[in-house]
Length: 303
Image 1: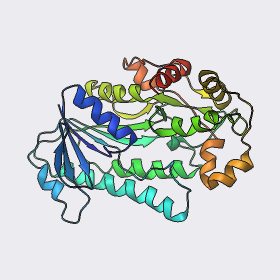
Image 2: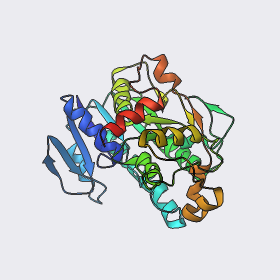
Image 3: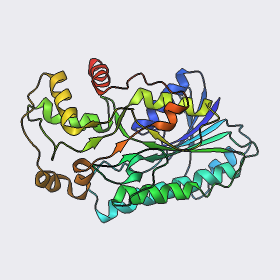
Image 4: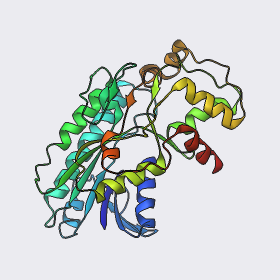
């Protein structure tokens, strides 16, 4: 296949690119850097005023497009300026991807639009499936709704459209787990806030495999939860990590401490969501790491 990926230099994007290259597919990555070919990947400059990428892909027959571009939401405090970058970067990248596709003579069969389980909002009681409506009670929820609505501007009936609502991605070399491990490595790990908030997670390798499964499964369209089938409470997560690292689980991080450290972004840590990947399972996807303990064991074995 010929696959176009935006956001291909980020934590998740790098893994997706590496996976499809290893599978023998041709991968194009949209980048703000110079157009070049490197390690079997064709990097194409985009988001310039000249919009040269639209002309570049006019005659390139693509099978799939994946949009993962956007300012990292979990890096830095949510200042007004940061919030603006988080939202506008996603809207602008999605609009530009749509323009690229509209300019193609040969349309891709599928467009996977990145999103996040933050779409649903925070809840300690609700269970969210792929068809659940958003609560709109948080900044991430508001961002994801606008982001997904921008994607709906793609008026191409021949293209299968999928919105990938990605959970907390676990891997040792980036993402949330790397930050979560730090307190335990310094022997100060413990309960985070109440510990009763849900963590809907997924192993990085299952994430990239699910993207491949979505592309290969014509019956999958619309929103898809990219999460493992067994969410856990933060208390269980912390105890599993402490056990695997042979560290104590004793030093609590109270709400006021988290708010002092992270500001509004602390709500992402304090609150939670119980999200299930019903659509993926009903369409035959098999998880390699459905349980947290096995996922953490595999990840830490590579550290």
